[in-house]
Length: 288
Image 1: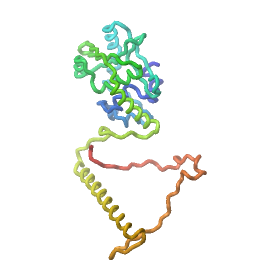
Image 2 (image 1 turned 135 degrees about the vertical axis):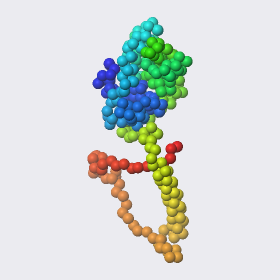
Image 3 (image 1 turned 30 degrees about the horizontal axis):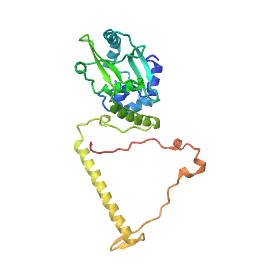
Image 4 (image 1 turned 135 degrees about the horizontal axis):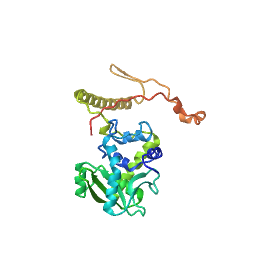
């Protein structure tokens, strides 16, 4: 399958790709071309088609243009030719990886990055930037390999740096666990938990927001006190109506709820068709 084609894009929506791994692990510092942060929630919306495919920004477009020259430099460095290839995990059906290069015999596999000066310097010290680490682990898992190459290419320096990457099995377990959890959200069409990046930072209204948090907290404390007092009064009156001095304490009988799941005639009816439109339910809390 050729990368950057309609078929490839469709496959990316139907799978977790290697470039999705840093997002799911919460280490991606990047944003979409529309300014939205790359978070699990935004990725979830992309997989379901709620958001359109990201067209990329100038940096990603530059990276794509330079991938060819960077690959040629890598081939010259290692003395063998490699080609892009789409692969799938041998046992986990929702995992795929779009490799920048792999040799015909499979002995060489590489991830190519046209990096900035900071990341290129890290590579020169034999280090992998944290935002790329999950991607490499994901690729090795899909290829069933315990090592691969990371090729950092600097066009301005006309220099490539090769780092041999080895599988981290402990990190792999964490990655597989989080990807499995994320994919359940996709299958159930249920949004994953939001992270701090999913919120817009505001300078105005800080005091009002904190005051509202305190009021909500006090309300919960009052509700807890109400529940405790009411349980004590019910214990005293043994479930009967009672008068405590000048306070009348009683009850009224209301109809119970209808158990729609127990109605035979409704078993084959799609009740979702009769659900009202979604609405926003605002919540407020302090950052943990």
